[in-house]
Every structure is written in C-alpha cells, then in structure tokens.
Length: 151
Image (cartoon, rainbow, N blue to C red):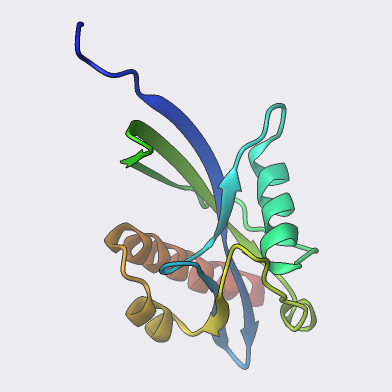
C-alpha cells in the first residue's frame, strides 16, 4: 500500500545463564541502558546455540555453556531506529555454567555492568515485564531440573 513503510525484520538469540551454589540459583544479568540477558543477532548460517555461545563469549567472556533441554522463550517487539520501523524476534534458551566459570565474566564494551543475581534480586532489577515473565518461567524450570538431577 502506498505510504506504508517497509518493516525491517531482525532475529536475535540469547540465554538466561545461571549457576548454583549452596542451593541458590544465580542468574547473569548484563546492563547496557537497562538490565537484561546476553543476546545478539543471529548471523547468516548460524544456529541458535551457535549464536548464544558466540554472544556469551563476546559479551561476558563465558565458555562451557550447558544448555538445559526443553526451555525456550520467544519474545517479539517492534521499535524505531533512524526513522525505520523494525520488527524484532528473539529466542532465549537456558544455559548452566559451573561456579568456577562464573568467576570468568568480563563484559564487553556493549555493557556497563554485570551482576550475578538471585531470583528475587534479578526480578527487582529487570524493568521489562516480558523479561520478568521469562525469568520467572526459567526459575521454575531450573528448580525442577535441579530437583530431577538430585533424584
């Protein structure tokens, strides 16, 4: 239709990265303008897990992600940049790392801060409602997963 602008589409992948210590689950939050999770554009011919591994390395200096099967959370939003309307889809997986690996976090220039936060602390820091909803689902999933491993 005339006058209707062409919408650009973007696809990203990210991860809710966590480790456990003394029964407490700690989630990795990274901050640019607001607190969120490691994520980035899916590059051509790259799988979702490849994107997440690359972004975890680039943004947080993390290797050794153990993906937790069965968790996937999709987000969709639109935004405007340089007068261009952009439709964005992001998919998030859940990934566990060791307590030792968690000490290796070094953030990239893309972020100003990082934090390993308990669920309650993370929920207070996250401002985007869909990120809070996603974290709540991930938290329940992790608790069940950890319980199954102990059985």
